[in-house]
Length: 170
Image 1: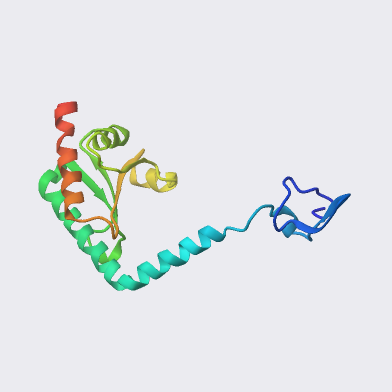
Image 2: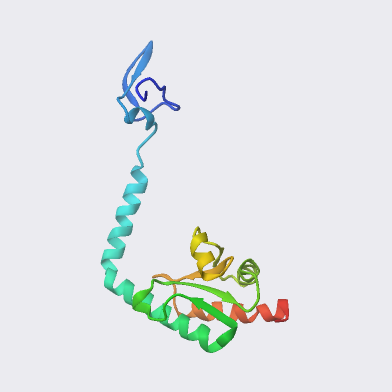
């Protein structure tokens, strides 16, 4: 059936032969892969791999664990029972992602408050609705930390959350 199906787009690798009066398609699956291969993307990916290797994945993981520990400690110290952080407290058992509920505020409201303070987070069910149901949550706020973040970003997150009091009076 694929042999009989005409290609949607033309060009690049989907061509087997070209003549003045027409062309023939390459065999499946190439006949459906029109256009230039992702050359720029492959080069960029290679550069990213080289960059990460120059830092060292172990060093990146240590940095991520340090930030996660700092974030867990800062959030708990500053907000105590007003914040529910999902997942293990042991940073060796988790990645640099913290999902949480804050006070009685909807996660989308929290993300809006943080956005207005230039703190980027995600809010929602994060494509994990069965997990949300099991946790008894409709949604969470998710903060992610990586190589390009530092303690100032965690401090900005905490300051932004404290600013929710100004808006919602909670």
